[in-house]
Each structure stands twice: as structure tokens, then as C-alpha cells.
Image 1 (cartoon, rainbow, N blue to C red):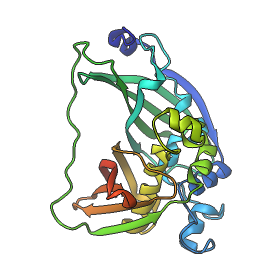
Image 2 (image 1 turned 90 degrees about the horizontal axis):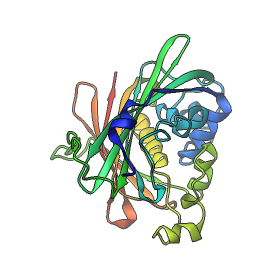
Image 3 (image 1 turned 90 degrees about the vertical axis):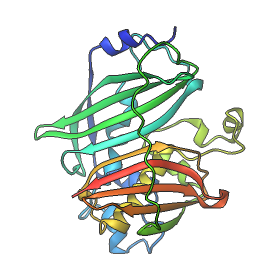
Image 4 (image 1 turned 135 degrees about the vertical axis):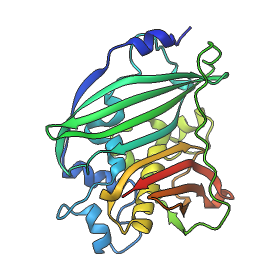
Amino acid sequence: MPIDAAAALAAPPRTTDLTWDSKDVLLYHLGVGAGAHRPATDPDELRYTYEKDLQVLPSFVTVAGGGLAKAGAFDQPGLRLDLAKVLHGGQRIELHRPVPASGGAVLTSRLAAVYDKGKAAVLVMRSEAADAGGPLWTCDTEIFVRGEGGFGGERGASSRITPPERAPEWERDVPVRHDQALLYRLSGDWNPLHADPDFAKLAGFDRPILHGLCSYGTTLKTVVDTALGGDASRVLTYSTRFAGIFFPGETLRVRIWDEGGGRLVVTASAVERADAPVLADTVLSYH
């Protein structure tokens, strides 16, 4: 059995040091579309693309200092995964303080849960970052492993969220550059699926697809700019389920419902493919 849930959950946490600077933040922001849809020197974009008064989009934590790949919680006893069967199923971040534009942290990661979905196993990796000032952020990364279910484990709770049955408060169409994946991958995700047409065809796609975490960041920037007055420090939590693929060069349609009490429900879809879902079960909480 490639997955031994008991052994994997019993493995001790792993720690690693992260460091980043403003150049890393600027590159990430460009990778999720900052500066592409207004004049490049618009003050509303310079807060993402110029080191003076630079703010940090919270989704940067997924790539900070090497990103989730450095956490290593899936590389341990009990887990022998075939990467061809692995899908990034969901992502949640919680911000304990605004992320500094340059700094460092100690990242502690562990396997928090293993769920049996029948035809697939779901692994949840929890990564917690802290610096000398205390906790900075917590990330939960959900991975689906096809064909590894049926081992008799807990199924886990459903996290499906249905948007309100009314028009959204905001709807934005965001054109995504044809070279967006090539730019985003410079922040650390080198998977050839997002760059190499031949590799993409082997994976069953007619052309390279955009990174799910790039769509995640692009959607977050759209929500911050549209519903939060462009102030990224107001974000407390941001969670999503990756519901479908998105191709560079398409238009991302972001719909936002304000449920009150500091809670926004969000969807993202591909305009050119009849609003095919890209992100679902997406919630942002803010102060």
C-alpha cells in the first residue's frame, strides 16, 4: 500500500528556514498579473510593483522562501506517492500578521490529516511560519492522490460552499497574459506542465495550463482591489478548491458576494469556455 496513514500521521514535524526579500515579492506580484491592466505607474498598481510602500499579497506565502515545496511533509515514511496521480485539490491560508516585504521565518510542517474518499486519498499538509515576533501565517495544502482510497480511513467533512442565489456584489473579467505561466514559474514552480507543450500533451492537455496557485493569487488580487479598497493587510483567511483548469491567454471571471460580517464568497471561471469553473468553494474573511 503506497499510503500508510498511521505511519505518515505519526511522523514528526519538519522545520526549515525561509528567507525572502522585496525582489521576490515584486516577481510574485508580476506573476499573478500586477501592473498588467492599468497604466504601469498607476498608484494602485505600484503598491504591488514598486518597492516604495510595497504591500504583500497574502497568497505570496505559498512561494515565500521556496514555497510549499520546501515544507517536505509529503516526503516521509508512510507516503510513497506516484506524482502522476497527485492533484493539488485545495489551499487555505491564515494570516496572523501582515507579511513583511522582506524577512525570514521558520516553517514547521506536518501531515495534519489523511482522508479516504473511496477512489482517492486526500492528504492535508499544515505549514506554520513564525519569526522573532511570533506566528506569521498558517497554510493548509490539500492533495488528492487518485487511486489510493479504500483503505478504511475517515472520509472527512464536506467543505462545499454554494454561492448566494442572487447577483454578486461585484463581477470582474480579468484578461490573463499568454506568457503568465512562464512568468509565474520564476517564483519556484518549475513543473513543465505549465511551459512545455509536449509535456502538456503527455498529460492530456492540448497546451500548457496555468498553475492553480497562479489563478489563486490572481483571484485574490482581484478581490482585494475590488472589495477591500486595495488593502491586502485586511485579509485574515483565504481558502479555495481547485475546480478546473485555466489556460494562459484566457479571461478569468471573478464573482464576489458580500455575506456581511467580514466574509466574502468568491468564484472564478474561464470566460471563453462557457464559464467553466476554475476556483470553487472560495471564501475570504477580512477585518
